[in-house]
Length: 119
Length: 227
Image 1 (spheres, each protein chain N blue to C red):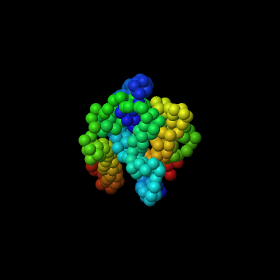
Image 2 (image 1 turned 90 degrees about the horizontal axis):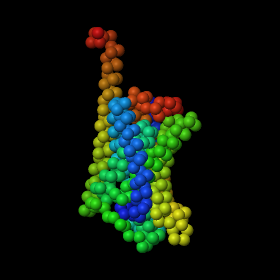
Image 3 (image 1 turned 90 degrees about the vertical axis):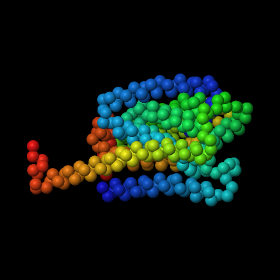
Image 4 (image 1 turned 30 degrees about the vertical axis):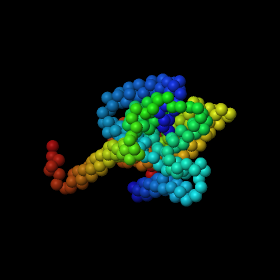
């Protein structure tokens, strides 16, 4: 149990480091090649690459709905993440409560007075 | 891994859609059957779908100086089989294409193929292979989720290279270029996704041992090695 807990903490630490270190490492370099906006989306970079390989290509269809601004776009992304996190939180909460209830039942059942289990 | 709206020539857009549709139909059928036979799995399937929703909304910074997101479909593929994750990935991608101008309707087939088909199937295959080698459940889950995530981005690179071969070097040069953008960026993010998937599977093993025992994938060699 203890080892499991230690491993869980270690995994969380690695995840945080993997996410934070690039910000620090790349952010510290003064001149990154390409001089594009730092930490833009890789999707946008691919789009730029298409422009280099096939300069004549014009997208033949445009999005049916485009968020009015970056703020609206990040609102929608936050909403998507919130829906996911909400469901996961519900499951975790329910699971922890169920485990506690079972532990409680087990401990009361182990008590000498067992009349409530008479059947 | 989102190919932007209109950024695949019509023939490619149609081709990828034609490939993805049968997988989607198969996925819906297999999901329906699984839930009918085991209604108690509804909750865990919901968690797996929520995991994909959450992770694919998180754009994380990477060592290449650009941002990309994990896919989160590996978890569900390990639990319910790869086909079940096709409809889940489809819903996520449709949501992003319609509301966020992220990806697109014309590129939906190609994006579904990379994120909702190649990703889950690679994850599942890796999990079976690593499990057969006798490694621990954690290693199998980690490698499966991590490599499935990477496979999605390698697929996107190949799809773009097919549509836009380099005028001089052809497919290969183009592929290396797109892989440099997508796959390289994805390496640390894929590792994070692998670790996160292990954390969720560990929690499921603790809290949902009963439901998990009924799942064919988790029942066999999964138990040993979890210290």
